[in-house]
Image 1 (cartoon, one colour):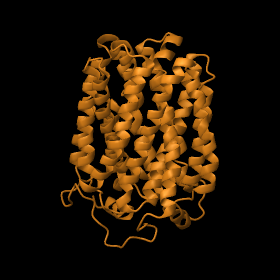
Image 2 (image 1 turned 120 degrees about the horizontal axis):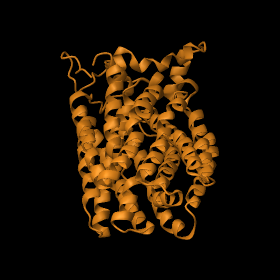
Image 3 (image 1 turned 120 degrees about the vertical axis):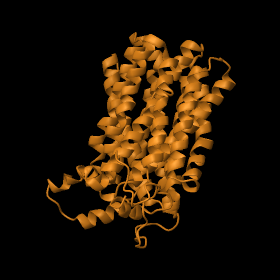
Amino acid sequence: MAPMSSSVDPTRVPRSSATATPIEADEMSPYLWALLAMLASATFFDGFDAAILATVAPFVQEQYELDDRAWGTVVGVARLGAVVSFFVLVFADRYGRRLLITLTILGYAIFTGLTALSTTVESFTFYQLAARIFLASEFALSLIIIGEEYPTRWRGFGIALLSGVAALGTIVAFLAAGWVLKHYDWRMMYAIGLIPLALIFFFRLGMRETRRYEEVARERGTQSWAQSWEHLRVPFQPQYRGRTLLVTLIWNCNHLVTSPATTFWTIHAARNLGYSAAEYGAVVAVGYLAGFVFGSPLAAWLLNRVGRRWTCAGFYVLAAIAIFLLFHVDSRGMPLQMLLMSVTVVSFLGANAATNTYATELFPTAIRATGYSWTTNLFGRVMEFATPALIGALAIEIGIPAAVGWLAIGPVVGALIVLLYAPETSGLTLEEIEAGLGKA
């Protein structure tokens, strides 16, 4: 990726001379607060369902007699669903955000429930793969909707808060697991995943299409079938190519440590620390509670006050240090492990909030879902599904802590990429950022 033109400050997207268009909200309205609640209710279950895989990991391994390499493959294939979600998410630029987010909620609820009926490792893996397709699509659409609807100075706050609510879902999943796995089979955790079906009706009644998408749809008018899919190629045009590569690279650096965080730590805690499901569930729950209470608000504040670049880079470096310590401090003391997990989750939520902010801001409305899906849900997810398989293979030879430690260099590289190539978009409307794409 070549540096930006020397005639333009590479750390700043130029501001448009035009005033903000009417589709830019000036202040938070009652509907925008209600919208946040509607999206938060869905992302809560996104975090809940994604966390189930980590809570049941030792039990599924035992039932299907899977070693670390085999389990890493299962997790990697399941995470591949986030990549396949590309083929769902791109429809949002053709048919709108509201319709697609309703369908994704239905999809992941059904396949999460079907996981409870799996009888073989193959069926378990397939259902989890399918559930992840819709999980990743739903979460991406939630962030895109907030990015398009919220006022400029509230945009980072909304994106960070949604990431935090997903963490709250993770907390509830681990707390529930401590009781459910003690009294029931691990399948009961997935049966609970049917609850989001009730949200579909809530979304249909209360949610509107975004104003920015409606404006683009009006300007676009009637198109032929071939013309309606031309947006798939736009992120690779010269004016967007650098941003596409940037977001893709930093997401892959991020996933080198965020992917194994809880999935492999629960195995490490059960095997190396001697923790029960209730004990490692409590540690993770406390960590995600800290992330929800401190990580998301801190990220929201820093994104506006310090800026996107330094916030993103700082959280990346902190994430690398935190996860290394989490897997290498052998003390069984729960207070210490809770502290390490808390710092890890705070850093992860901050890193994800900053990266998601870039991913939603750097593409114009007409191709925002497409650009996000190329960079975040397709090419940006390569290491998300490759990392668990890689750690599983390395763990056979050097153990889980050492395997995770070797990959902790990833976010450090990501931080350097951000500082060298990422634009500063804090305080800019989406239209100003779009105007700057052709100049940076």
